[in-house]
Image (cartoon, rainbow, N blue to C red):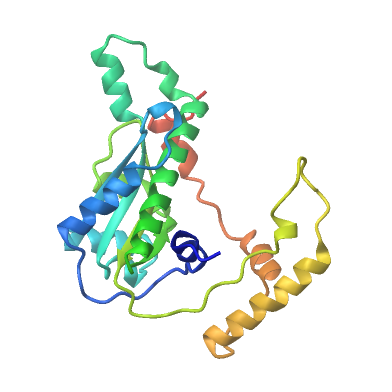
Length: 247
């Protein structure tokens, strides 16, 4: 099917090196409008976007993110925030009990809204010839990130999104076989190991090609090794402190 939207989606790859060209204000406004056009649960629009253009702040976020240079060097950097603060203030203004915003259900609403908005922005950016890279590592020091962004209660910084003009053309990462990710009617608990083995070879070939033989790893090895990575245990107490997901 020759469809430009589908071509954009299927051509996605993360860009980790950008030119020095900055996004224009018109581009930023258009990207934010595209983000706002995403689906939102019950029309609550429970997210906010913080555009970061202060060089010192971008540098701090780069350090928090494990010194990834593309957090600082890009055309524009955006932090997507799961946000129930605005709704809390609206409720208080109306004299409504806002304790429902403390619940896990309302947290999942805000997380979903922020993620939907970010993906809309990502697809819009790629359709404009720009590249993107999601930055979940702004959560490595969640307290520091929140302090830098002056986040109030009832907010949670979900991830960053680096956007800009690509200065590289990486290969596309192969995705899981359909058999191992698409289920019909009920969840198929039995893995298709033969399909996984073929996929492992694809991923191993991809890493070998991308790194000139310096990385030899399959996808299942990567997943297994990642299970021993120390988790970000500070997230739960941070959420509770922010009055999110308490019930």
